[in-house]
Length: 366
Ligand SMILES: Cc1ncc(COP(=O)(O)O)c(C=O)c1O
Image (tube, rainbow, N blue to C red; front, side):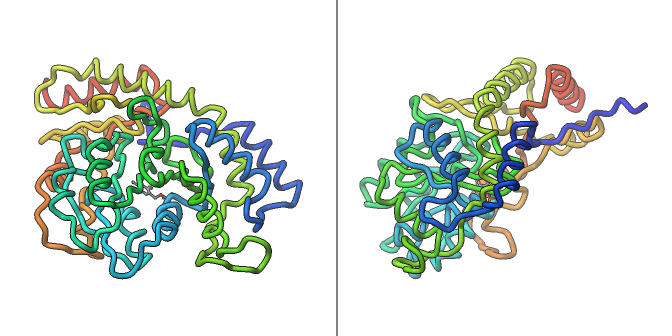
């Protein structure tokens, strides 16, 4: 018998409730709805999510990428416009900007691996229309500084909270601070719908516009009033999401417990930098990302134990073949070579946490 663990970096937790609700949809035959408000499951999922986030409105869509695209379209961003994004992110953030004909302008990160407000200031031009701070790893971007810059320069703020459901700044959930917040429900995320995403709004009019854009701009039948596409979430996906929401608080609690325990065990080790919560913020601990010049050795040692640590964004977006830009983003380059994300998801128990800490120490001979 092999004693090797097999611990993924993140993994969906699905149960009977998900199965029951999906079966309900299948039996009903109502797999989707092209009404403005969406089908019954979509509406129930949106209500549950809205109550959890305490937002004015939430619009469920087909993916996190779609949420970003809709946000940009709803804010009227398009050809000739520039949108400031961090390069240290998943490519979706920049691709959404490209998809509306606008230009992503890449900026560096700060010590929390999120967008650097000072670099944002340097990159603003007459063409800049919006800033997209990404709450990477569930770390909250420097919202105070970003919102101040946006306010001064009359720019929109679209929060990419794909990885940050449940993260808070000053007791208020992320996604509610900018003009729009975007979530992803990919199976690797805090909760899943299979594929899926959502937009978070404080402005009800903008939310209604997003509902139209989700559905080819239609309101009553085939009456397209604005540009849109099919970004709808299906009833099957929403059914999974309704069940997932019931366990969201428990998921977040388990992640926090795991992150705190791992922090205690790794504190004081030289050669690694531990993640810490920005002042006034509460992270969802989507990932526990350390930084070390020995990250490849640590990763290898963990892999040998069956623990799948991941090096997210070894190639920063600006260096991907699609963009291939020769710009200097020193903190981004350094992070792409030194960060290593460790699993702290709800399936990770104390035995695994202790194994991770032991293996990290062993790899560093600490
Ligand atoms: C930071 C970030 N933005 C956007 C997305 C896009 O979400 P989706 O995969 O649901 O389209 C992701 C998902 O991986 C992400 O991590």
